[in-house]
Image (cartoon, rainbow, N blue to C red; front, top):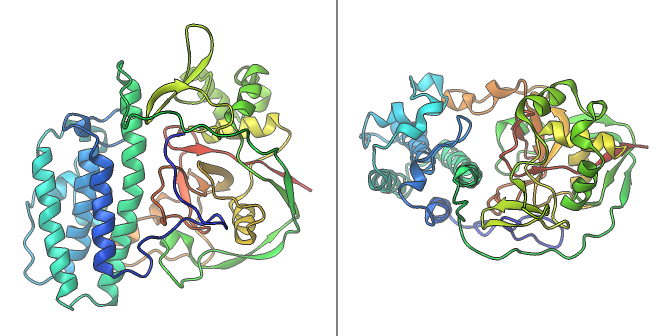
Length: 408
């Protein structure tokens, strides 16, 4: 197990910042990013292990650029950028805000140095604090700051997934934060909970923060279905592997089988065989024995689908998942993100926000699959039952697992 978040008795994540002022919440979230980075050296923070990942230093700078470019520059009169060149270096994908440094080359940004990035953060933090304290922060500014904070929480999880991948490729297999195995008691037997289906309301109700991809709330028609009471464990996934799961093309989607062949997949990412044949797994605490009771993690959508086929079940749709989550029968949030069988598409009536923030989600609504729930690495209070995470089907470096569903 990599990390643990606190949940209340109904399975919801605690929100320590709930009811706090915007300024207090700003300080809390921004400080949390520095805490995530604190175990890392300057060298650690500059490494990029693959094009899909980013250096920790880049995450710290990009989340700062977000506040500078989308809050301070358009909303604070007389604001002067810390360094105008940073717009090119730390813009991620906002076409409306100008050209960008290539994503795959972020690991080459040895400059600005780590201490300069931290100075950049302090400079922008001082300006945001001044804007909030000035009383000039109207509802639109507050909404932009809240968006920036939720955006930063997304990057806090990405900092962990990305450095884990980089450390795994290091022959020394360093630990991000040393610690023993968390250990999980034997998992409860998997049970199936029936849901009657019918016409259901899906999506965010607009009463608190949500990303635009969670709206508008709308109705869907669901046939009756069953959902498993928990996520699939490592021990259960081992049974799939021992039964030839990675050698049986009939279990796989065509693209998934092609990935197995081309990538040489034999197990989930970060699983290794010891000299004596026992399985070990690389975690944020370093290499340790595989715990069969833990939820299986770092699966692609293809692997999740293949396991579901082998288990004579399927993945739930995101609408089934949300319906079950709303009823809390059973609680469906968990220690790993859960792949669904739903394409990442716009909801009926979806309209991207106006201006540059309209590029936040809408333009990615093609070729990706939805994950629901949350993971050990998700900041407490960030996820909710309407939250729509999304990745390409072959992605494995995220904390992604599965929960089974089946038809009635």
